[in-house]
Amino acid sequence: MSTLKIETLTPVHVGSGNLLYNNTDFVEAKIKGKDKYFLAIISEEKIWELLGKREEHMNLWLTAISKRENIKEFIRRFIPDAKSSDYAKRKMKLFSSLGKTDTLKELIHNGMGYPYIPGSSIKGAIRTAVLASLVSGKQYPSAQKVEKELFGQNPNNDIFRFLQVGDAYFEKGSEIAIRLINLNIRDSKEELKDMSKSQLVETIGEKESATFQLKFAQNHYQLFAAQNNRHPMILPIKEIQTIESLFHLINTHTLKLVAEEIEIWKKVEKTEGKSYVKNMESIKKEIEACADGKSCILRIGHASGWRFITGAWTETLSNFQSDIVPVSRRDKGNYKYQGYPFPKTRRLDEGDYLLGFVKLSVPNDK
Image 1: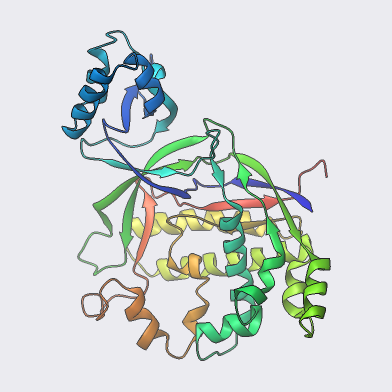
Image 2: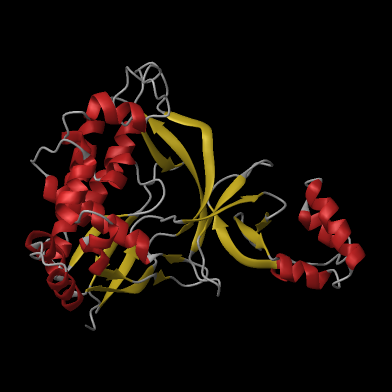
């Protein structure tokens, strides 16, 4: 079992599945003495305490929620001098203006309130990197055949069953709220930025770090292979059985995707595209600095983009344009976006900041 460090180079969001509503589930407050704001996430338990745990007050509270009444004003009807800390379970810095109808995609937290990146999310991103690297330069008739040939015929025989990845828990207070917007490759006469589908998202902020456990259960795999009377799949094991080989593979994979993104967007002759390229070039330098095999850069979580989430390896399939693109696009008939490249959209924050890039490394004390 190896203890690895994970550091966020850019904000990361892995969602809880909850959508929080402004002035009902969270409120905006100003940082004392500064022209900056934060969001306070409402604690139902704390409000219940403030209301004296009285049934008639509960009914008033439910009515206020149904009418979308400002929760701060509601609480002040009972506790005139109440502060956000009296009724909030956590706070986060806000890096955007806030609208009355805004909703917030909540970040996943454990039962103790710590934000974290699940081991399953880390493992999924690693799996994608390994898969894309192994199929590079090869032709397969379908994605299903690739999975079966490289990793196993079904989930019970999947090689990644034996890669054990733990959760990465970050410190409380590492959360921030940012607004995601769309950056589209469009006709040159149109704006690239699309604010119409913007979304407020709770993330783990940049330059936050945590540790997690990773292990390839070699002995269990060998026993499994023997019991099932089959030879071990040497190639996949070789790529993931040591930290150095795994880091090298991940870094090579991420570098390839970032370099391709830079080349794609260099052709977009607009300011917004140039800003995206500049940020990608900064990430490229981070990747190139990890060439010693002791660290790597991985992209993970929400708003990573289609090419990073899938590894972009299906682009090499012969049926990519005819079958995969129409299914992947919301316009299943592929008429509305037929004149646009695939994928045409990237998600950034309002300052053209990218999401989801993390650095994995072996801690210095190891």
